Image (tube, rainbow, N blue to C red; front, top):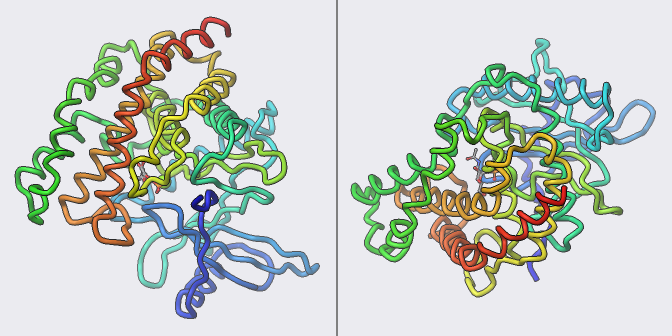
Length: 383
Ligand code: GN1
Ligand code: MG
C-alpha cells in the first residue's frame, strides 16, 4: 500500500535559511527550532516551521509562497483568504458550528499586513498549524469520507451568507469545463511539444465525453443552479482529520475560494476520495470507484448541506463527480501537451499519468452512475 498521509520532506540548508528568514518576518513568538517542506500540493510551496516560545512550549506554523504563475494577482488571493478566515472565525465564535475546534488564522507580517514579500520576490503568508491532525491523500475508511464531506458542506454553509461580490475571481473560468475542453483541443492542434501523437487515445476519450461539459454551466446560466461562494479545491487532502478520532477538524487551502457551484466542490471531493489509487498511479487497474466511499460522502455532505442545497443541485451530485474528474483529466492532459508548465511534476510524463488515472476514474464512475444517482436520491428524499 502507498502511504496515505501527505508526505513531509527534510530541507537543505539553503532552504532552511529561507524558511528562517521568512518566518522572522511574521509575528511569531520565540526562537526558530526546525523547518520542513510539506509536499502534497501541486501549486504553492509549503513549509512548516517550529518555534519555541519563552515558556519553553513549541508551536508550529505553516508558511506558504503563493505561486504567482498560477495566481496572477496574489494580493487578490490574500484579500479573499483574509475575508473568508475573518468571516469563519467570527461565525464560529458567534454560532458554534462543527468546525469550531481549530480554525485557520493568518499571522500578521512586518508592516502590519497578512503577507510579506520574500527576498527573491513572491508573496508569503503564515497560518497556524492545525495540531493533532493529519491530511490524507487516500481515504482509508468510510468514517474519514463521511467526515471530510460533512466538513466541506459545513464550510459552504459557513460562507453561504458572504455576499458573492465580496470575493474576487482569482482564476477566471477556473471550473469552466467548456473552456477547459476548448483549450485542450487548441493545444492539441498547436502541439507545441510534439506530444499530441502519443495521446490520441486520451484525446479521443475526452472528445467522446464532450456532451457532458456544458451540463452544469447551462444550469448556472439559467439560474437553475445558483452561484455560491465555494471552496473550489476540495481534494481530500485539504481537510484536516483528527489523528485519534478520525473527525474532520478544519478545511484548509482557501486560495481558490470564490463564486462557483457547490457541485464542483462535491465532485472534486468524490474524485479524490473514492479511488484507493494515488492521483499519479501508473497501474490503472488500481483505479476503481468504491461505492461505499461514495455513499459515505453523500451522507456526510447532505448532513451539513441539506438546508441550503436546492433540488436542482442535489440531482446533479453524482454527475458532478464524473464532470470534475473529466475536467481535471483535461487539465492534466493540457499541461502535458504544453510541456508541464502549470502543475509541479517530479518525473517525465507525470501529468500524463495523472490524466490517465482521471480518465480511468471517469469510466469507473460512468459505469456506476445510475446506482450513484439512486443512492443520492434516496438520501436526499429521506433528509
Ligand atoms: C491543484 O495545489 P493543489 O494540489 O491543492 C489545483 C486543483 C487541482 C489539483 C489536482 C489552483 O491543487 O485545481 O484539482 O491540483 N489547484 C489550482 O490535484 O489549480
Ligand atoms: Mg490548492
